[in-house]
Image (cartoon, rainbow, N blue to C red; front, side, top):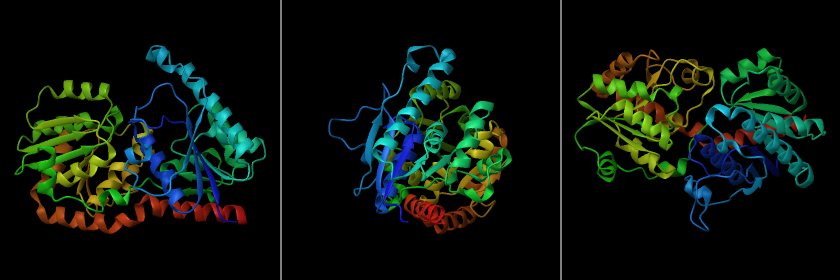
Length: 394
């Protein structure tokens, strides 16, 4: 049985400036390009990125012209931002549960015959309890609470299969009692069209107003504490001859990082950039950085960073924290230079080593480009669809 119709369930703002929104946009669009009638169910949140009237959210995310999923905004209880951050646990759970209930109802009433790929355990649980026979889960982390772990196990046992975003997630699912044969690992990916006409290094630097003759180190992505960008700022203090550029992050995180930098002269923090501008930053760089911290588990074991796959597409040599989540994707000294996590001096030494060795940079760049095609969103979508078909047919 081929996957002719697919509902993708994601409790996310759409569009948003977080990586989750980008992942959801790219994943759903790739399924649509694969010839599957795709519906994207997202949360109807009170606040999201405002686009001009008539603007295409997928184009804003850098999705090339072509087939688009149908977007359905699912009602939910949303008063999270009305209370201080320290009091947001209960309203956040209410938002999640109300979205899951309404998304499951939407599927059962309007898409009962479709395959479903749900990022939300609670929605999948409602579907399997209702007897929906084509429910799949996509899991990015295994929850810690006993109730949610029990829900996950029940949903997993009733679902047709689980897409785990990393090997670390798969290991935790198996430890929870999920049958290993029901799990497939599929990491994140990149949009190949955004890297088809990459500018030269000189052109990218002119476009971004960066020094033409400097050794440039670039970080692109979010600025959550576990991503370790503060370590990159500290590493810049040890390498005054290099120029560091950080592109990404929400406004509050950008302000926090700028305060930490304290006006460092060889560092530029540009804040959030629209996805189509990310290739410019990668093209301008000599080295990319992935300085994840060793804690929490999402960093060390679960994450599948978009920046890694985009660096593959750009052929940008990387210095990365030596963590299981990154070793799953990158081979030491074949794809990246690994350094001890949580250590700004070690990070600086790794960056310095790579900047000083043009032959090593060239070798890493060649290897990364060679591996890039297997990590496009389109290749990932085709693999998942074929796997889903196999799980239903047998």
